[in-house]
Length: 154
Image (cartoon, rainbow, N blue to C red; front, side, top):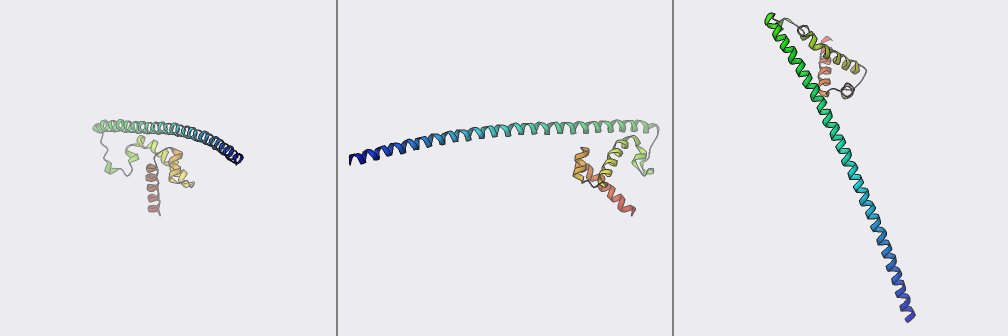
């Protein structure tokens, strides 16, 4: 009987030792998972910061392009206003704005031609905007005007 009690105690100690070893392994696994999660969160935060910086740069570039366009148009408007005091350009007499401000529309004509060329090649409006790096709304406007012009000509 004493031998049986001793064997049961030995078995209990072995089970306890095994459980202690499993607990230590689980703690190591938990620490490894925690470390991996910290690395993942750090990586996501870094990627988020990079994307944020890219977005800020993109907005800055778009703003500067818009500011440049506004400045250019204001200069042309001032030039036309100054010239109009000496010579008048009644807008009602002209069918096309290009006739009144030919230099203002030259840049836009090139962009519009590129848009129409890509459209005729089968590119979508989103693809055209992405390729030419211009706003989707601008592409949609030009293509809608082109389609209307085509429908009037038919």
